[in-house]
Image (cartoon, rainbow, N blue to C red):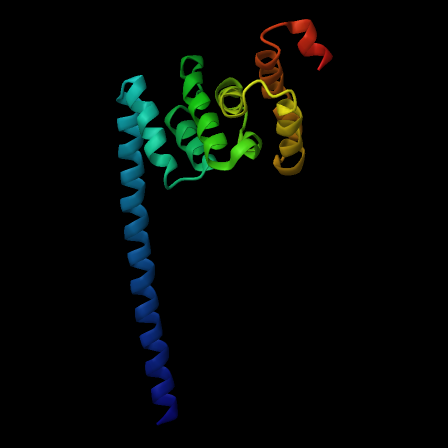
Length: 170
């Protein structure tokens, strides 16, 4: 009797397991179709709607997910979409504070760093310690802190009110 029970249990397990795998595949296909539809909607939307879509997505999605989404929508990274990455930088700092700067990547000509630097200035004003705070976060959190230097240059330029020689001294 034990062998029959064991055999029936194994067979039942495989039936349940197969059903779970099939359901997971159906969900993945549905999600993929939904993602493709959202990417298509995003690509065909006007700029203001694209910004709103990123903002709506940011409620549930991580900054890296937003970057992946934009990269999937624009794999060739056209320069005219640079501002979309600015928005991701703003969202990063809004979500994670100054450490959000470290979540940026070079996507769309470093736009995330630009947006994050501008958002940091909006939050902290012309704080002379702002650039150092952004750099500290990058050194701690960014996979490649060197990527932050470009965006830091923008932050310093803003903080010095575009007095470049003063910015270089910083």
